[in-house]
Length: 307
Length: 259
Image (cartoon, rainbow over all chains, first blue to last red; front, side, top):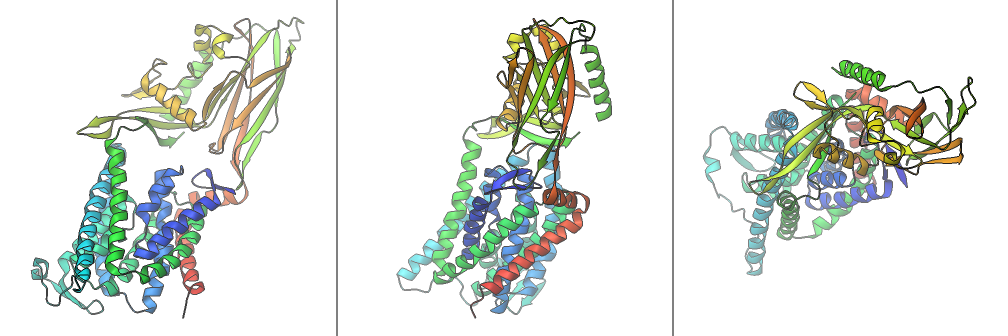
């Protein structure tokens, strides 16, 4: 069944888009991530212009992260104070990212920067997650506790000033790394058109030692607020949010996320991290392949203006 | 700037428009002057019918005739970029901006345009994809380059892949020596706006008569409502979409609640 998208200006197969929403929703529910880094390339692949894809995916992520946030809220496993601290720096990061986005677009180098940042971030983060989770799996094999978190384990990050206590997460850390993480997530999200959940979750675990219990819920609140405001900003400035496409994606996404979350809860934490690491790494390699191998077509068109 | 460009176009068109010897007259009719883009739009085929009639002053018809129909969509500006290998990765290094070029361009004829008239005539009349004026921004000036310019070739090829630029030597059929029919394919991704249709009649390689008509591609119903809302009330539209996201998210959490 074909449906014509009013903003993207092209017809798509409803079931294909619904299926994409389901699949990405399943993955996002399973790992507690937004899934933008998977959905945006998928939409571009079916012919939707990158600008519309980035803008529309933000509303889709808002929907699935809200579902997630509600269920974590019911379990009281989210840290609103930590999310708000991250958010305050995230806004600055987003503004910086949007500014750089516009500058690079004018220089025709946006594709390159997006490609390079996907490769760098995804391969490094994916690689680290694979390494860490394999070690954790090995430890459990030898009958030792899988978790890295040891009470009282301190890194140099804990020596920084402006310490704050986050009761829900039971951590006492300096505001500097919290702000730095928030800024990086906001900045990267604006440049790459992603919510940044797959980056935020490992960062919170490894740098701030946020317990697994609250990390996903907290990440979801942050994702929800940034993506909902990104939707409004994209719609107000570029008029690029396709509500019809967003609706189909959301319906698929929220259903998929429910089933994904059930699968995720049944799996062991380190196995889950290993799978996510492999997925992130694979997407990163896919982008690396595109940059290194000679493209089929050296030429590409970019729409400048009407008239 | 766009106005100056439009004026330049008008002058070029006037300069090229040699008044043909008045012997034939074209009467054309389009099956539909309005293409409505609805939620089930997957492209459309329009048919242009026409006859060649003797001009009132004379009765002399001189078949066989050749006919070229040129359909041009709303103008837009596009940049063609070329990738090159730098430090082992492929980077956009060079680009050309095509200014005020048609978003849709179809050159339909009863046989390949290169067989209809000689190169000089085609170039002068801008008939055929090879001879259609596609101005590039070169510094502060606009100019069309040679037709085998790599950026121009790439531009036409990419537009052709999207189904938006096409040349067909079979799309026009003569039902009788003086009655013809032309099939105009509108792909699903056709841009909305006003389309100009230029019909040119050739007799033994020379322009004998020309006429034009127009059609409109518009969004209707729900599609138009959404597109208008997004354009005119961007902020409100964004908030409505964000609210829709929250509602669906909340609704899903209720439907799938297990306790």
